[in-house]
Each structure stands twice: as structure tokens, then as C-alpha cells.
Image 1 (tube, rainbow, N blue to C red):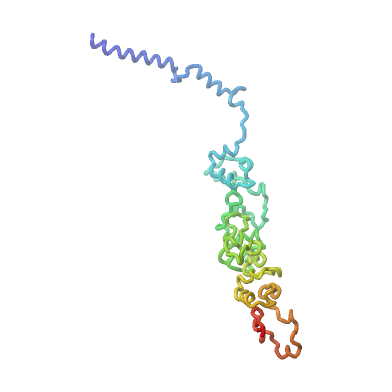
Image 2 (image 1 turned 60 degrees about the horizontal axis):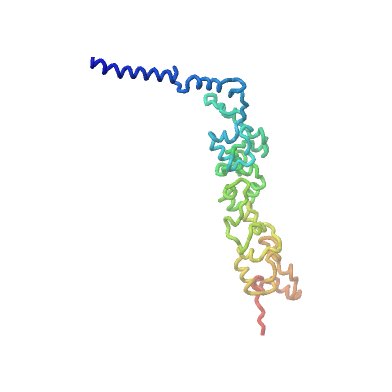
Length: 305
């Protein structure tokens, strides 16, 4: 009897406990009881108070960005005019199927909004604008290549025809060593200052001063410049000539370099300004003024007695 009692009591306690739990939780083990099941049914109800009666708002860019963080970050930092609702371009989404290979079909096309802004010569928008979420970020290292069927033309010059023609006609280190991406790689459309790479010719020189003589796309070909170009700018390259004019002061020292050299490399004759100051007979005998005056930048000084 003693052994039977000790075994029976714990078994009875377990049975009572199990009955209590089944009563409290219900057949499905739901601790909420009948009221919880009713609440769930009401929540899922398709009636006027149910979730299926609600108006669903279109996805916002922030909601898209929760999953598409990479694209959202591009738009956030450098999206430019593309900072609008994602659904403006992406009318279809989450419909890509690798078995169907329907990527081109579902992706929006640049031409739908922009047509062909650079003309029919260059219809492949994504060759330059590789990241549509940051349309002005252009990877220039991928563009520095010849255009098929157009000898001597790099991709940039398909749109920038004038600059490309100038490069081809008047080559310099700017296109043989640096090329387009060397100056314009940071942001498309950015125009750097010459002084970003080159030392100035004179103190307090500004970028606009460089452009008096140089065109960036034909830098070695000195263009026509105004007469008032400062002599010190010329002296940056022509150091000896400029130094002689400053050391041996004559009336020539007061002139602008451009007065005698209106175009780069042009050498005017003494007669263009002075005529024949020593008389006709002497000038017939000495036809070259420099036989006596030696150097117009370093004229012999008359010694005072």
C-alpha cells in the first residue's frame, strides 16, 4: 500500500496540471483564449473595418531605400534632377526572372524621358551615364577609347566635337599625356583652373589671365592676345629677354611686348616703328639695323661724357 500511494500521488498531480493548461490555452495552445481568436478574425476581416478596406499608398523612396540602400545612397548624394519618386521610372518592379532573362524588358529606358539629347551619333546612354541614380557621375577611364569607324576620335568628342577637333588639329601634352579625363574626371561639366596643375607665371595670377594666351585644348599654340598683356607674363617663358629690358632701361623697356609682337612668334622690323631715322643713304649702306644696335631688347646704352 505504501509503495502504491507514493507512485499514484505524483501521477495524479500531473494529470490535474495538464487539464488546467488545456483549459487555459485551448485546443491550439493559444494563451489568449476565445477572445484572442475573435480579435484576429476581426483584424483579418475584409469588411469596412478590416485591413483590406484600407487605401494602400504607393511606395515612397524611403521605403524603396530600405532594401535598395545602394541606389538610394547614390540618389541622395548625387541624384541631381533624378531625385523624384522611384515609381516615376520603375513602373514595374520585383518582376525580374532570371529564367526569362527579362532585365531589359522591365528596366526603364532613358529615351522615355530624355529622347536622344546628344543626337543620333550617340544613342547608347549607359556608356557614359553608367549609374542612372547619379547621372552626372561618369567614369572617364571607360570612355578614353577610340570610336569605331571614326579615326582619331575618342568617345568624349562624339558630343564635344569642337574640343575634339581642336585636340586633333593642335596636339599638346594635354591630349597626348593627360586627355579628357585628366582634367574633367571629377564631375562631368567641371572646368578646372590651369593653376590646379601649373605654377602661375606671375604673382596673383588668376585663371582668366591664363586664357589670354592659352586655349586648354590647344595649349601649346599661343593664341592672339591683347596688347595689354603684362610683360611679366611673357617674361615667364622669355626670361632672358625680359631681364635685359629691365636691366638696360631704354624706351623699349616702357613698351608692351605685344606692341612689337602682336602674335606669338611674330618679329616686327625696326622700320615698322622707326622708319629710317638715320637718313636714306646710311640705311642703304647698313640695311640691317641690328648690325649696329645688336639686340632690340638690350640696346647699347649711350655713354654720357
